[in-house]
Each structure stands twice: as structure tokens, then as C-alpha cells.
Length: 94
Image (cartoon, rainbow, N blue to C red; front, side):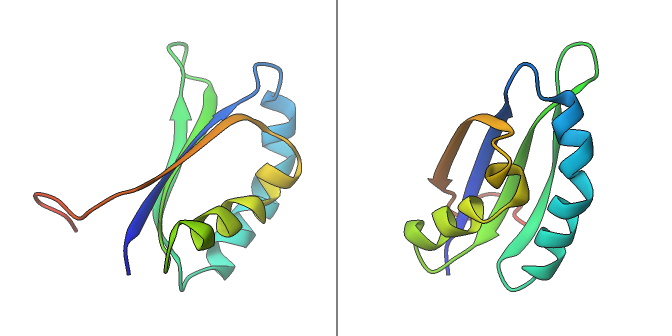
């Protein structure tokens, strides 16, 4: 199955919401072990969390979109933008 990159950027006013939703988000990705491969939060220039970057292994783009749509961060409307792209395995892939 292909990998998909989920590049998610927070709304500018969302720091408190991110902190509140983080436990539910982490529970969600742990429960999706069949699809979730790795990920982490993104930091802005000041070192504050400003988004997420995740890799999921899904049958197709529609499945990757469903993964994203059911994430508690997405459901809470944390993100200003979500980009999802197929991510072919490249050089030095894990």
C-alpha cells in the first residue's frame, strides 16, 4: 500500500485547542496502528507547535482523507489547512 503525507497547519489562534485535543489525537493515531506509520508536530520560528506532519499507509487517497477526517484535531477544526499527497518510498526510506 502507498504512503501518504498529511501536512496540517494550525489556525493562528489554536494553541489552546491543540493542547486540549492532544490526548485524544494521540489516542486516535495509536488506535490506527494499521495505517499510521510516523508523525510529529511542527514548530514555528518561535518554537511553538503550529501543525502536524504524518505518514499513513492507506489503500488510496480516499482512505488517507478518511484517516485525516476522523482525527480529533480535524474534528475540532484545529487546522487552517490540510494537504494530503501520495508519498512514494524514496532514498533511505525506513
